[in-house]
Image 1 (cartoon, rainbow, N blue to C red):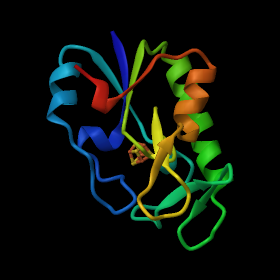
Image 2: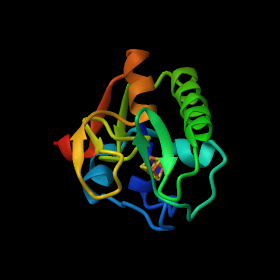
Image 3: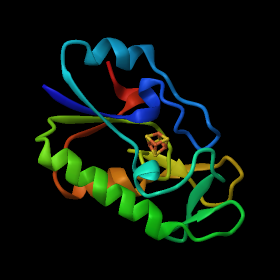
Length: 139
Ligand code: SF4
């Protein structure tokens, strides 16, 4: 099986704060499979570390008010194309990210409140019919 994984889950320091979300559970799950790392925010040209962003009224916006919607969506498009071109079977994505969140995101107030919803990358993948799973739901 070909599996795309949020790069930060593989231990790469591409998270907004310069860290990662390494997951032992992911590491075990992907063993023996072909793995493709995807990070739409880095692909979109954003630096690491970077100011955190949330989706504010449909627009991806940094905490300092900067509109980064174009960068997020460009990165999501590039990584979606990579996934389609590689005939990926399953994507395992990091929870609650404004890019990768599959079932929940932060509410756009930068107060830590969560709402049902998807990041722009997860949403794009779902619209293309690509199977995505939140890392929290990985068996
Ligand atoms: S965009 Fe996705 S892969 Fe990249 S750091 Fe954020 S959650 Fe991880």
